[in-house]
Length: 210
Ligand SMILES: [Zn+2]
Image (cartoon, rainbow, N blue to C red; front, side, top):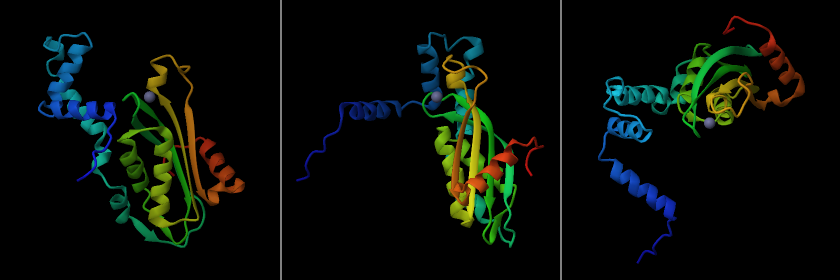
């Protein structure tokens, strides 16, 4: 006979709650939340809100339904180029997984090819797939770098994200104009010279994708 598995109280509670809630539509759940915030969900201005929130949340998390490898697959080309390829100032809007509040800013991506390059328009698409999920900025940075590394095994990849987090700004935890910078350096981007060249190029004012 199988031994009973110890399940913590909080996990049991979460399972019970989600079983109960599965009878309700997402729209009904948002209506309930609005009520619990102290509002009247039947007020004219709020009547259509649950449906709108459901749609906008589905859009903001559409990256779960997309496969980064598949996006890159059709856009890899053999090429002897071995200088740094850099796409900078890619706009991102994501949601912090701790507060479900937006963080937004810019991503800079660079790599040095080793026989293969990625179609330039696919890099912003790749960034978008990971950004449209519940995220922490550090993981988002790392996932972009890893996806490029896996797709074309370049000599190295560098990713820098500068972002501002509404969960900190709106709650007064951070000065309103400060931003958080994260970076992921793979392969030759771990070398001081390459990393400095990348960061120097990022700092130069540009007009968007190069
Ligand atoms: Zn947060």
